[in-house]
Amino acid sequence: MHFKKICSLLFFFLSITISTAQEPFVQVIPQPNEVIKSEGFFNFKKTTKIMSSLETKETALLVQHFLKKEFQLSLKYKNSKKKKKNSILLSIDSNLEKEGYSLIISTTNIKIIGGSKTGVFYGFQTLRQLIKNQKESNNKIGCFTINDQPRFSWRAYMLDESRYFHGEEFVKLLLDQMAVLKMNVFHWHLTDDAGWRIEIKKYPKLTEIGSKRTDSEIGTWGSKKYSGKAHTGFYTQLQIKNIVAYAAKRHITVVPEFEMPGHSSAAIAAYPWLGTENKQIEVPIKFGRHYDNYDVTNPKVITFIKDVLIEIFELFPSKVIHIGGDEVGYKVWEKSVHVKEYMKKNNIETLADLQIKFTNDISKFIESKGRRMMGWNEIMGANIHKGFKEKKDDKEATSSLAKNVVVHFWKGDLKLATKAAKQGYGIVNSLHSNTYLDYSYKDISLQKAYDFDPIPKGLEQQYHKNIYGLGCQMWSEWTPTNDNISYQTFPRIAAYAEVGWTNLRNKQFSEFIIGLDQMKKSWKLLGINYADIKK
Image 1 (cartoon, rainbow, N blue to C red):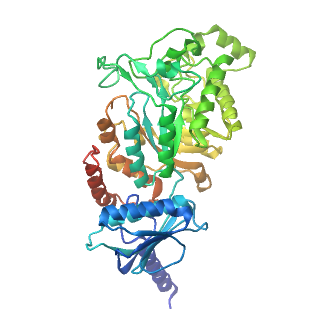
Image 2 (image 1 turned 135 degrees about the horizontal axis):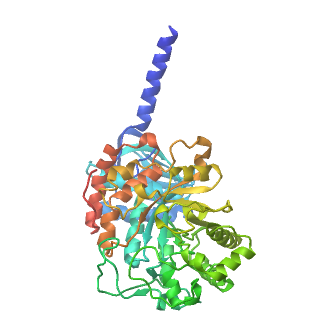
Image 3 (image 1 turned 180 degrees about the horizontal axis):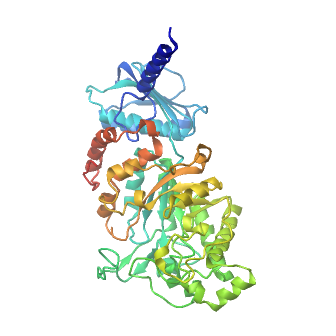
């Protein structure tokens, strides 16, 4: 046969193979990465048994509870690994990727095989959506083989509770929806200028004073309008532990953010000696960037930060601890005589270098406790805020950030993220123009959210491993109620979930919209206030 004809035939059969591997589309969000349709149906019967090892019993009981609710079937659970007809079998295969799974639905049984307990849990989430979305009646589901694993290991949703306290019940609702969407990091912004929301036993004034403000700016930036109402609220350590445990059952890691050295007004209001000026202030009622910072040259302040971190370590088992580090105003340091003396004594050239020295010291402390520090990309010392108009703004750092730090990219030229990835830093990409949920749907449409790619364009393949994934951020300056938060979050959170999970070749916005219809029905039943949009 002619060589060109052979090549053409090979290309034809390859195209069929690729097409078959990607088809058919299933109404699951995030879309699985390999779906193979088979003939026939699996019938759920009263005699169907749920079987698993003790290791996967927790998810097996979730299957049992779900089928009771969905089909009114009271199925028996049995601790067994034996494959039997008319059964739902859950097991672990360590050869699979940790968060990966295979879901095999045949006419005789259903198998959920995970690379770990997490993989099994995600396999159940896919089965759950398939059952909810099935069009067939009589307690049956079509046969599929689904082989799946996430594109990125970091798939985060961030809730800002410094500006407004939203409460344990609402946080748990968000965690439930994250679990359905296979999102695995709840980034919890608990401290900032507008309020301190976490009980710290050694420093009780942080919540006695720092969790309260007398009023709140409303509308938008610089509106000069205020609610006329006081705002307060914080989480006790017991509540924190309950929420962390609740998240863990849903295979979600809670990453706390303790903001430093800027955005620290609430803490300084509680303990004025924490500030560079050592002056009594009140918790600000106006949102935005404020004047004073922690005095990073004061050993007593460093002790305070480490004391707070130690209590945070006890509450949060997360390997990563977020320290913020964004929008640090250098004016207060620039004016301070004792800060200048400290810099001269320690051969620190710029105020950006002062922040980097502080950040690296805190990073070493965090690392000494078996954890890893994360911070917004200002911690690298690059000037990304040209509009602040401060005398020292144009002087960038001459020293380097420690390599063990995870850089949370949110603002600036994407070349900064590319450069950091090439230098070996771990990157979570949360570019504000594409991932900030407080932005309107006009600024970030559903499709714009869906089309976001955490890997910067042009980044060589060898550095892709340094892009851990993405976060979508719900800043709450202008969303005081839970319904406000929900409206901004849903349905865009589903788009970001698919960005984090599904390979680019398997993503299709038109199919995502179809899958979203069923999800909206679930949100409506739960009373979640979502934006009913399709683009």
